[in-house]
Length: 142
Image (cartoon, rainbow, N blue to C red; front, side, top):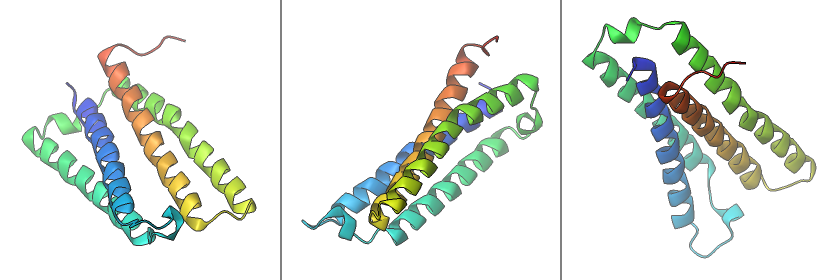
């Protein structure tokens, strides 16, 4: 497994676990009231920050285990990275359009923020899955 494939796995796992933690905390804090009334902003920011720190620490630990491998990136790695990011970008666009429409319809901030966060997570998951699948198989030939 290449260094870049390991990074893709780390980011994929962190995205899933971070979002799962966020949803768990939000649902636990509901206490019978509507979801839109749950204080979410601090939880969302802490979850995103913790996920970023966790990914950085995991990647640093992985790189420390094999420092030479962390500097080796070939054309295939760059192409796989580019493909994964292009595929994942679709959910960023979907989230932006959804947030814009929700804001124009005067939806509660809770729903707008959560749709944007969900789409960021789905983007990271789709990019990660794409990279892992392509590493396991091969780059598509257009």
